[in-house]
Length: 315
Image (cartoon, rainbow, N blue to C red; front, side):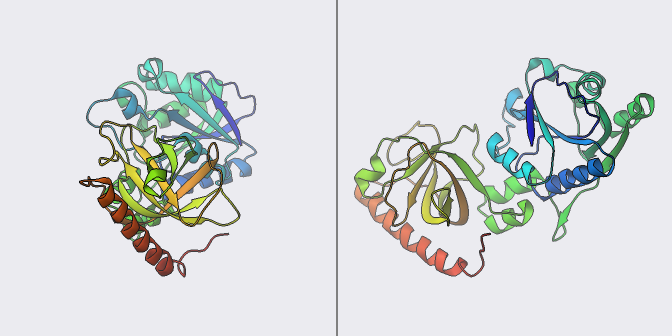
């Protein structure tokens, strides 16, 4: 899968294009990407997914910033499985925010990507003040010689699959619903970084991942599987949040104690897969109370692994 960046792409081969934020790359996104890939193969076009970084609502700021479901690395990893030839990443900045919708279509999609066909979601809006919609795209298509289709919503057990629904499920710790909407367990990946070694001092060393997100999709303590350290996933207990017992005012962090593991972790890329929510993050009166609760969390997690082992398969 080819990856390019910028507002001025240069693709010489005609393309079939879709565009969106694709945050979480849920079942609806996956269906649209797979449909685009199939159309492109059938018509000898290059399949191109256009996405935006950061999420536009993150760039605008304010109180309505959505919790980021997936990092760019995670998003690209799932998109690669959908058969897409090319992902073009537009940096969302002032230039893009102020660009009229028709100029975006003309300069980026038509001139830059050689678009011959466009597939969008039924709720897709774009351009300055979100004035770009299906009606505009269809009108421009008749004038500029490209076809356009809008994909209808994908349903899961009668529920419309969307990034908003996925965020709602994760916010209340409903990991089963989140898995159903996404088509896979929710996970967070990243490089293991040095922490302050407080977990080691407590007797529970942790693999620490910085969360470069302004708002977290999950918080609390979870039973997890850690991928990337061997042929099979390793069981662990993860804390996502601000660690109120140890220090206030820190950046949010994902800390995972991998059960019965000894080895070098720093610098490795791991994927932490969330299996069950154990409890809220909480502040304890002292470190002994925290140490005791971690022991309880580990016992609960082991019970979860025993219960879930018959339900989870890994290929």
